[in-house]
Image 1 (cartoon, one colour):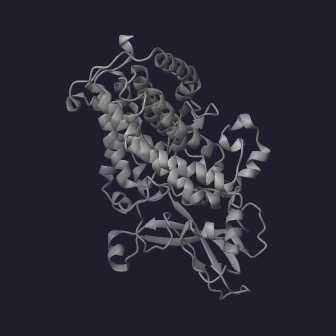
Image 2 (cartoon, rainbow, N blue to C red; image 1 turned 180 degrees about the vertical axis):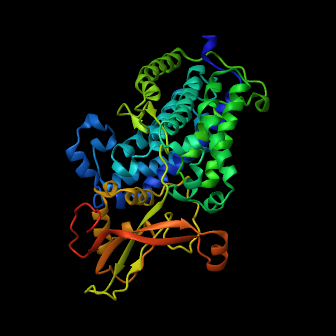
Image 3 (cartoon, rainbow, N blue to C red; image 1 turned 120 degrees about the horizontal axis):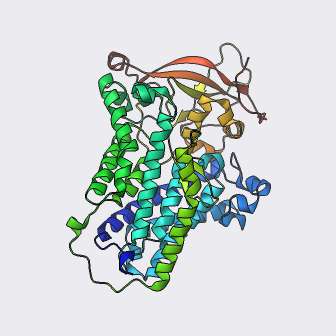
Length: 479
């Protein structure tokens, strides 16, 4: 079938595949280095407990067959090794069926991790990586030109990702209509980066222009993806530029980078790649697999597409247990104030008015007002992200904050590795407490005179002082 392949998109496929393998690498490293404290057998939300209370069909994966921390580590490090092999182009040196298998294995491995990740893996970019990874399995290698159907499915994914994010904003916070959301967002986003302070202090007309440009990129430009080249490629290029702006202004794990990866597949790289090589027709079995998978994705797209046009649109939702076709979106509402949960401990056995408390330092989330925000994305600091949600509402921390504090009181080594600073290197504290502070960026004069990037003000207690044994009750506001 001559229509089946798209000659001239070989370089587009290569760029896409190498970039996607890099995102896979970051995702597997994040899993390998953090899982023991989060979901390990002795973690805050142990996988074995999840497996006992949920059925197979709710979250199928390898860990339904067997779970141990050693097996999870093997899965994560195997995914890391395969990602490195794919970055190096190993899929181009094997037959077509083997190349598809090389892409299928990391998809299965990461799907298995997400299925047991619980709240730590409840982010939209997890499903986005899985949906993108599934389509990558079908793209083939140098044995055949890229299939047209898969290239269109990638554009359909990019359309849903961007258009869904645009719609959720227009249906959500009124500040998106007034073009004022970025008066707050750079300061209140989950994890500011090293340039966020500077973005926050841009003139307000620049903030208005940022929001307006975002609306155009998310609500108008996505439709151009379905037009002929070079218009479709130009539309994808505008999305890449927008995402790079977001990369500079914050830390959103691999969301922005993966969006860029998908957009790269819609750019026509033929002028830089030379004439396509002569190849035999794709094997019949490959055509059948790609067509069948396309039919499946189109059928599964019904509910996500209906969600796009619904007045009750939801974001970051999976409608099938394999995360094959999902809905996306971010920041339908914007926080006006930044609240942070500050965790402190003391080694004094009896608490009194003069008790000295020492603050635990987190790697990414704001803590010490004098510490400049750091760049961590595309690496995902899962605990730091969930601490941001906990500050918004104690309900977000109901399942894990008590176990987190318990592990601090035990001096748990795996938990302490998630932190930047442990104020008790010689032994665990006697008591731990948590308090909520309001954080605000300082102005340029304050930064010059005090060296502080933030000013903070006490708001309320989050969890009163607790000692061993820790009562594993949900944290909340205290009278």
